[in-house]
Length: 459
Ligand code: ATP
Image (cartoon, rainbow, N blue to C red; front, top):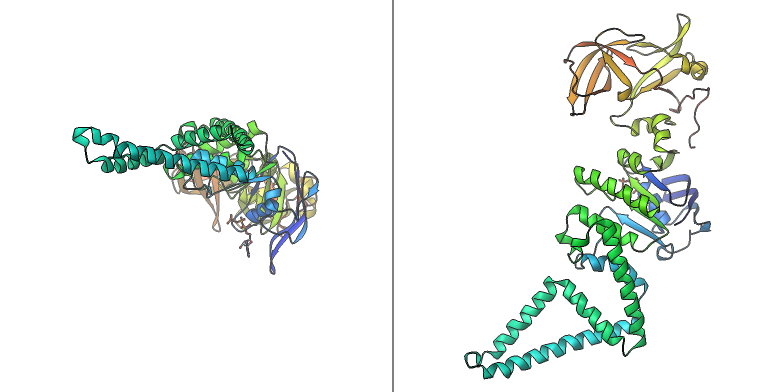
């Protein structure tokens, strides 16, 4: 596996900048997720690494070697796409074996082997024809029907070869082992076939698709197809895996199942993986680290915990987490000997732990952020609670999303465990968890740090 480095990488399409000044170091065996909304430059970044897109500025290194001018096939990287990209006429076996065969082609042996296969089937057909033409004539009730039997037999055998590709595969192996007795290059091919066979068997076992080995892609479910696509990448034992939304064609349930399988698999393989997704839950669950991209710029690079707990700007705060973080625009003011976040609809006394951070923002515009899971709803007044009205209730089984209305049309979503017992239009008291508030500078939209100042744009 490999270490991958993006150094000031920029990609321009004409005047349009798709990726701007990307700096990213991916450790050997690390799983990094590129996440962001549609069009933010995730796929372009991946394609530049794969060598499918030219780099406008900067360098990409794989294992300390600059690969800007190295063609894709020589980068030793395997890609898995959303669309599976399987060969529809090949069986699972051949789809998996294909990448290995094309790399280890022994041209002359292949030619000899193809000729031998044509000869083999030709001789079988001639023998069968002779059998039908002459022998069957000695059987009284079959006399004169030999040719009919010949065609019927030929059709039957062809059907069997189509329906049972494993028999074709066995005949192929038989011819290879026969040919290897006469030709040295076929010996080499035979060794390769044995090697391929072992690798294919290992891979299908790892992916749990042993029973699908001789099926074609159209006979497989979406999940099985995706496993084959993963298998095609794994079998090559590349330096790194690049995955571009590999699960997005699957239905919601299968996606969750495949996500867990993928996690298990990559843990086992200890592979350097770069995974593109627009689904923040996928990114949070799979990634050792996450790169949150927006409009071609990496807004934050960090572990899922860092990105969730300390988003560097309002975009990251809103993108990571479901339902999204609530934001309210307001000002920090001095009031009653303390500091208060004052918005159009409510004033909120700022807890002690934020006082140093917001010191420089007195009388300045800021944005208060609070996640739905960090809001408590009560029927009676608690310390520093606010009054609001229940707008909408969305029970989802394990939780209820409660839309709460503050004066001046400010709405927030709270996530309440279980089925909430509130009624629409009920007056309630809202409490923000004291240690879970986020403040952002209204001009730059950057995080106001607890020790003062604002966060840097990229970590
Ligand atoms: P999605 O999640 O929708 O696939 P993405 O984050 O992967 O989006 P990219 O495919 O990387 O986005 O594209 C980034 C931007 O670059 C988009 O605005 C896109 O329109 C633009 N872009 C991509 N390829 C080209 C191209 N060949 N020519 C011009 N613009 C392009």
